[in-house]
Each structure stands twice: as structure tokens, then as C-alpha cells.
Image (cartoon, one colour):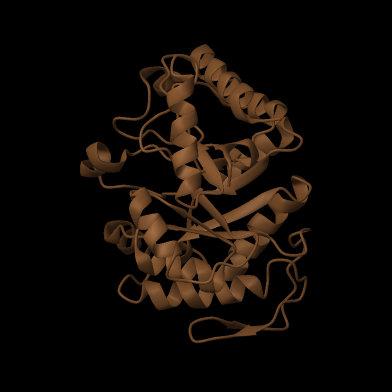
Length: 288
């Protein structure tokens, strides 16, 4: 992938507050601020924006992964109404927190109201306290996730789905509405070789976190990657396309050279206006 052909996406601020990455202004940002970001990214041609999922996090997690996570269904439903073209990606839903038909109904409805713009990013999950809180099985979450992925593939765009697997089995039930995309893209999040293997065998893309570019290139070389498979990578550190355009070019070139097909942009920013200016500057560097 050359940077000229690179797809750029938005690792949406405000909805998730991550230590060492999020800016102070995000603490008090409004839904209209978020909509301005989504509308700008939509207008500028960014590929997708994101929203992640956690139900409730232990307070001590604040310094490690943050504790703010806006609900993706409500958030992306609102942003769907404020945008026209940009895709909406859950990054990620935790499969073990939901029955596959629950996902098919709720996110199939979101796909319908957004006119087929949803990307279903999912993951296995790693926070045992959260699993325990909602009574979800933790120890076998990997095999359950694999079965859920197969169930989702059989269900997302089918009004009367049928599936019979190790953990999930259903038939004779109607899910209306269902997704309007003939095959909704499913991406896998995670930070392990197992998550990548799961993505290659059961999904359409991989959106890792805390994985080095060297590991990405190594793991990509271990499997036959089919055409159209997306590898969504964040930059190693926040981008500054306004003050460091050449360094930004080099960073995106490096991500592409290691196998990235979409760059999930994060920025150095100090205000909403500064964030919007970064979106504009990066688009001017790389988007047609």
C-alpha cells in the first residue's frame, strides 16, 4: 500500500478517554462537538470512525485503560444521522457480552438506519471483572467467540437465520430488521497472534492494539491473506500533520510498508478546533 492510496480513519476522541492520549478538552466535550468531528471526517473522505464498548470498569483501571466508554449503539446511531458517507465501526464489541442474535438485531438495525455503513468490530475481551459482573462465562471465552463469529456470519443479513454450533444454536426465529449489507464486514480486535489467526480465518479484517509494526509484518507473513482483508493500524504515537507533515508522511509510509491498509489516526491536539484542523491537514496530505 502506498500512502497515496492509503485509507484514513478516525480513532474517535471524546467517546473513549485513554491515558496519555486523550486531551483535557475531551473531558467536557458535548455531543455537538463529537458531531462536528464526525461531520468533518465525513466531508473530508475518511473511511470510518469508531466507538468501543465497556459496560463498567473497575475503578483501578482508570490509569491503565481509562474508564470512559460511550455506548456504541447509541453513539453511532446518533452519528449516522449527522453523516452521509463515512462508515461506522464498533471497535470493539465484546462477543461474550451478547447473544449473536442480539448483535444481529441491534446492529442490523443500525446498519439499516445508516444505509449500510456499519463495520462490526468485535473482540474476545480480557477484563474478568466485567464478565463476572454480567454473569458471562470467562474461561472459555475464546471458543465461545469463535462460535459466535460463525453464528453472526450466518445471521447478520438473514431475516430468518439458522445456526447450530457448539455454544449457540437457533432456527425458526425471525430477526427483523436485519443488516442491509449483503455481507457486513467483521473485523477482529486484539493484541495476540491468536486474535490475528481468528481474524484471518473467521473475519474480514484485523484491528489490533499494542502490537508493534514488526510483529504485524511477521504475523502477516505466516498466513495467506486474501484480497480485501483490512489491517487497521494506529500510528506508534499521535500524529501532528500541521507542524510535522514530513514526519507524518514517513509514519504512514512505515505503517503501509508493514502491511497496514487503513491508518486509524490519533492526533496531538489541545482543543476541538485544533482537532478539526488536524483532520483537515491530514486529509490534505493524503486524501484525494
